[in-house]
Figure 1 (cartoon, rainbow, N blue to C red):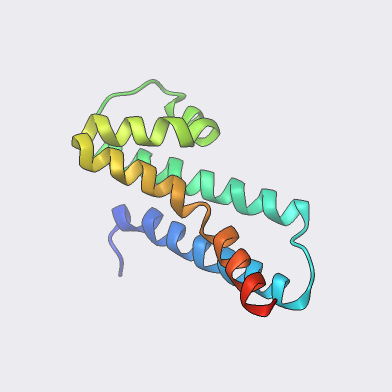
Figure 2: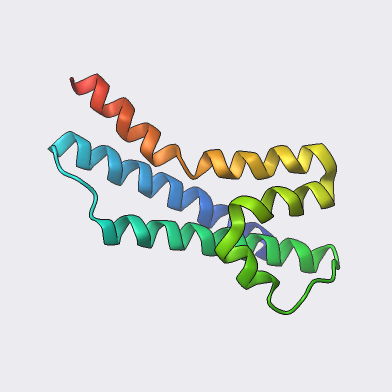
Length: 118
């Protein structure tokens, strides 16, 4: 069984993998991902990032306002690098920027498939 503090990371990895496969398949079939599917993927990714930060924050006993998870959900591209920098300095900042880049992996895979098939 996976430790509880690893579940959000696994969720992010699964979401990125499923998103990449879905985008690649859509490009392969000459279709588009629907707006609703794209939004659902983004909301799930945002939730997973907020969940990861909440689990990490509680494990490190960092105090934050009650609404901190909601703020993280809505503004994770800004807050996640700042949070990880606060906790782990430059290594954490790189982790936060890596999360932002990771959110673009499905689109990068779709572009790569498009150019391979073209």
